[in-house]
Image (tube, rainbow, N blue to C red; front, side, top):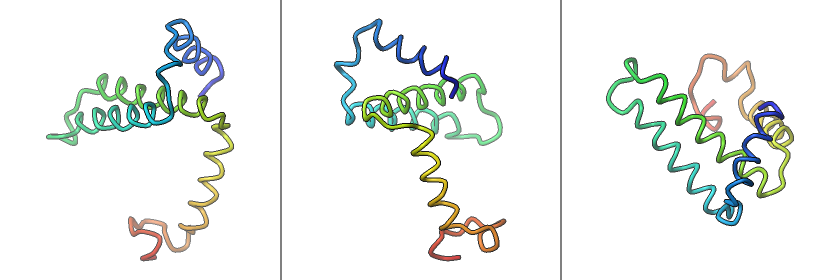
Length: 106
C-alpha cells in the first residue's frame, strides 16, 4: 500500500478518535467480519458478481488489516516478506507448480 493511502487510513481513524476502540481483538474480529462480507459477494455465483461491492469489501478488509498492523507496531513489508519466505520454503516451485495440494501432501 502506498504511504499516502496508509496516512489517509490513519488520519480517518485519528480524526474520529476511534483508536480507543481498536484493540487487537476488535480489529481481528472486524477483519473476519469484513472477509465474510467479501465472501458473501460470491455466495451464489462465482462469475456474475457485483465488482464494485467486491472492491468495497476488499478495501474494508485491507483497512482493518492496516489498522491492526499499526496497533501492533508491525512493519507490513517485513511481516509479508517473512511469510512469503516461509511459503516459498513450504511450496517449492518444482513440487507445487500447478498443484493446489497442501505442502504436507506435495
